Image (cartoon, rainbow, N blue to C red; front, side):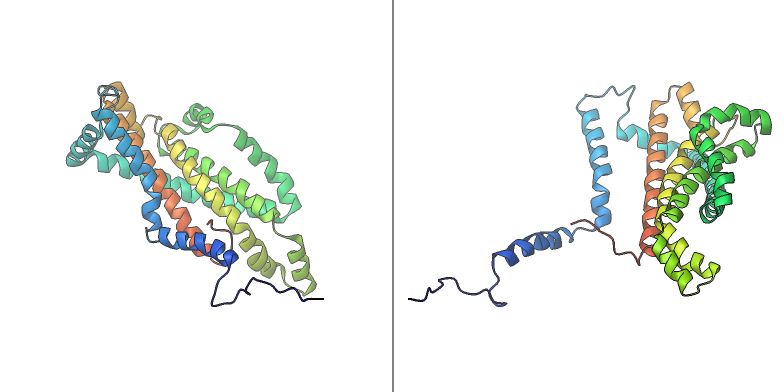
Length: 287
């Protein structure tokens, strides 16, 4: 019989085949995309929104009296900066958010650790936290004013509750999601309880904690809106209420932009913490 000869040459390292080309092509495209800094690509979305707003205002598609163009809004910001009002109001609001967030993180983590590590803690605390989760913050505002007066107490407490609930739910879930086999292996080799918690449980719960922190910071700014309706003369919530009363739509839009920038900065902070605290995790980062 005549031997059948192949007309296809073998694929060698010096001569890549079609499969190598298919794999290399998206990698090359990804390398080209990576020349643009990621932080700049992330800001492209908000920039497009601002551009669309400016174009719509100039084209007359928006009612300038009800939705001022960017130039008028930035002009209002400059006037408030020049008078010192914007710095004072934003500074007071940031102080409230910072205080409530720190207290909320501490409370949420402590409750989550107690409920997550022990069944007795779960039985005593979890149902209570679920009750607080089901009650919206703004429903508590009148009661907090009656119980605590109109000082800073109810404002800080509203923010603290919003942050603590988000931290608790996600941290507790992270603790209970730790692989039970890892815990059993650690107990088998004689690891102490403190070692088990420090090296297995808490690192395993860190991703959940960071998710809770991201939601908690968003909740803090939302809670601030309700908190600053409680008889206050300082804060961006007060500035918003005054602008609505005086029909200052440029100031109202400015406050919305401030909330947006604060939310974006909070998101960037959590992403920074994720890169530092979760450097050990080799998760999927997209293509």
